Amino acid sequence: MTFDSLVSAFVTIIVMYDPPGLAAIFLGLTAGMTRSERIQAALRGVILATGILVVFALTGSAILQALGISLEAFRIAGGILLFVIAFEMIFEKRHERHEKSAERAVTQDHIANVSVFPLAIPLIAGPGAISAVILLAGTFSAPVERLGLIGVLLVAAAVLVLTLMIADRVDKWLGTTGRAILTRLLGVLLAALSVQFVVDGLKQYFFA
Image (cartoon, rainbow, N blue to C red):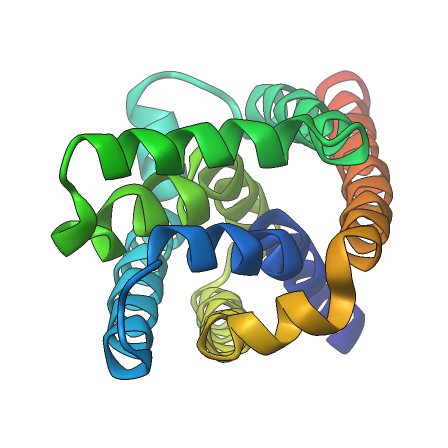
């Protein structure tokens, strides 16, 4: 475990969260709530999502072994999934899909539990984030390294919850254009990281 690997893991998680895009959706989800209610929803949602991701960070490899799936195969499949998500981010498809999830939550009277659905699941701890964590857990295989990965998840959670707490300011500061540009840049980074996952998986599969 090196500092560079920790930074790479942090970037992967933060890109998956897409804080600027999530901040705008969070404002829509919490429309009509007071500032204290919004902060409470952000805290509950991020804590729950982080707890789910920590569980997958600790047990993801065991789950794969129980299913008879090699880490190399999961790296390739996970990399392809992350690339699809990156494609959606670059072409503004992911934001539209998340907005539709938010609209469903409002129409189904789930505002009281918005921190659980759709904020924690699937907006934060969605398939992409879970796949990314399991892939990273394969890289951080030693117990001490897993603690490092959990530390990265906690730092990323702190950044995300702070962003959601000031979501109104972030959205106003970035504006529609700034948010679109930043989301696309994060998408390009995620695309590069996903390709690296696939390359690493192919290398380990054919040359291990």
